[in-house]
Length: 228
Image 1 (cartoon, one colour):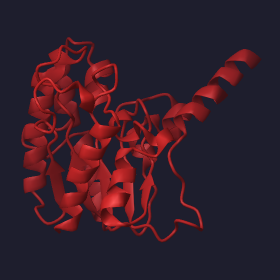
Image 2 (image 1 turned 60 degrees about the vertical axis):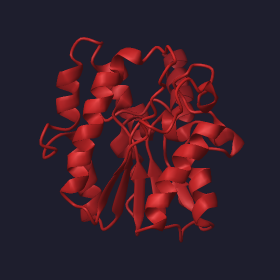
Image 3 (image 1 turned 90 degrees about the vertical axis):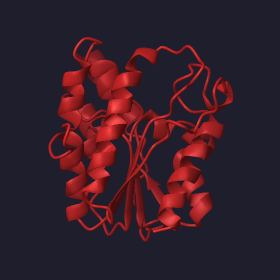
């Protein structure tokens, strides 16, 4: 029993790595949430949030957690950030930047019920589902929302190749969601960010972004905030 408790504590320590609000950064007005696409390269100071800070000259609170999903039911690690909604800290945010849904598709549908999972994340008309509900909660709290799509890896053989049709459909539905609130919700696709055959945008697994990839994502997201 003690061994299980220590293992659970280690897991919580691992996933609870999002940035907290302190006296030093309490005036930050940008919150970032999401999964490993956002969290990648944070240990070296070259994550998506770092690039947004560089581009805007503004503090970003980065609460993203590797492995985060919308549908995650273990209570302790979920509260630590593996449940995406638990990453949200209510505050006086001008902008909330986030991604999510990829791990639900990768691990939650078992490559057999992915269309059903897409529907659970966001309906075809973008009115219902975990993503619209969460985004509207953020909007109700006063923040404008920038929702990032996922990278694609054209010309490269990767373990997530079979997920592409569902990722494309997710992008289409997120575009519809943004159209329901054009002054408050902005969907930023990343499907065209990687040149064909360019492995330099990825880590060795060809899934997670390299520092170069994180910089490209961050620059594209920052541009939306700059121009609004």
